[in-house]
Length: 198
Ligand SMILES: N[C@@H](CCC(=O)N[C@@H](CS)C(=O)NCC(=O)O)C(=O)O
Image (cartoon, helix red, strand yellow):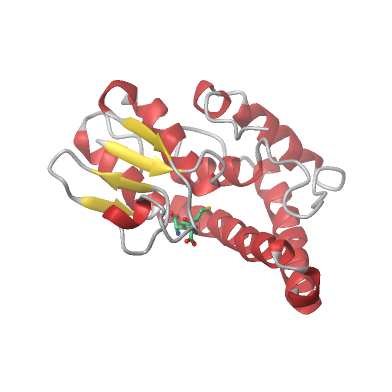
């Protein structure tokens, strides 16, 4: 199997870390790539141009980090994920909501200054702070402890190794429980081996 991804994409990191958690390093080739260029190699296999993109051994193309992890998990027991655990899925969706908001925020501040929308930036910034506060309470209640799941991986890849991102976002000071959880989760081998460069 091949996974096309940038090494900076947090969505790609969810898949890369999950491959390590499953012990699938030998059967999966990570193909670092670029996105958002007219000649990105991703377009040769995936018309959306998005990463992560997985090409399975039978040539089937998968996109979407959660779907790719579910597919990988289905390939071999023991299954790591808990697709029927609604509580986990609710938490995963909430973490993904924060990550999706980051993607909008970072895209906005990367535009030339005179094209940026201060109201979009303010909207995303306040969503991010609000959610960080929610996660601070949830981790203090142990909601992200226990056997690895996609909620933990998504929250971890959203915040770990990305301090000050996007756009100087400073969530640590006012969310000490979340900071401690991110540091603890980030010490996993799968997270250490998938740290974004630079
Ligand atoms: N919901 C998707 C999001 C994937 C996504 O937005 N990836 C970004 C990189 S972080 C991308 O490929 N951007 C390229 C583009 O928009 O053309 C997932 O979970 O995999």
